[in-house]
Image (cartoon, rainbow, N blue to C red; front, side, top):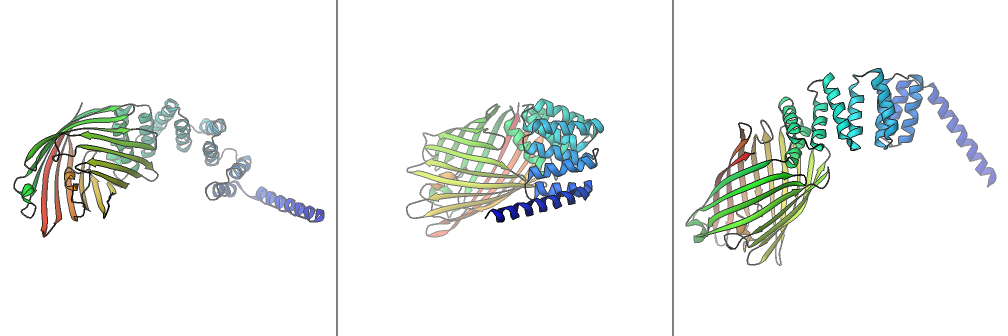
Length: 418
């Protein structure tokens, strides 16, 4: 056994020495390639660091290798080593964009956003309107809660580079974080054809709401009062929506609502969702909605969204468990941005009734009925602080013992930023 262990040790030393000797014969470019393979393919960062150091012995002024070494140190939380390597690059070449960009990430990820902003300004001084550096500066300004500057900068990026999905994702995040106040007035008109029961088709529905939203350091809070005339009766509903921030990756949605005017509105409503900002401009969501009509209705939801160029796609599903049935609702929404964050055209198609729709009262006692739907929204910013939007929807719904009923909805909203 001792002889076997001795032979294995000798062979291991021989292989290691041959490998080390072979590495000494490689030039700096070959060692750099090996280091990248070790870092990206095998996630062997210690070996990647060793190969970078060997390459720099051969070519001490090889900036790309030294920047990459600094990057590996950043990934491994070796902040001082990263600063040492990146500073050496900038000492030789103050305009090295990759070193500046790496320094921004280093300081931003280590909660030194003021230092990161200095490197952003330095980089944009050398490379004005650079797409990557501008987006990074927008993230830094957002972290510093300088939301107006951040949103203005990111909207400029969107105007220059309309295909940049990272910029659109960041703009939406900044809007959610911004300490801005909005007053929103909206109105919707609903028409039901004769196939619906008499309480619906005899007179159209009217729905109007007034909402005030305010950004805080914890997230956006919205208060809303909604008036409705439906089922031949009038009613009011009070709601509070909130979007608390949890981290740079996660935020949430919370809803509470009450009305004393059932069945015009559900007596109580409540909702919660957890959102995650995922890599490659994806966003995921899981949550629930609760509506208290005559009986309680629990709805569970999940969605996934994705920016692709000027487009945003979102697929949402609602599931309503019941004692004898299991209702489902699916909606696919496509939004095309032709300007800033509030300048867009939106088209949606789907099936079922959603608890987030203004017609959610139809969920009460009609869970088994099938429906298809389509909607259209046009939104436009007018003179910077005014947002005007128009919407139209069509629903075709199964009726018990009757032909399918058609419902049409047309409305508008006006939002004023303060």
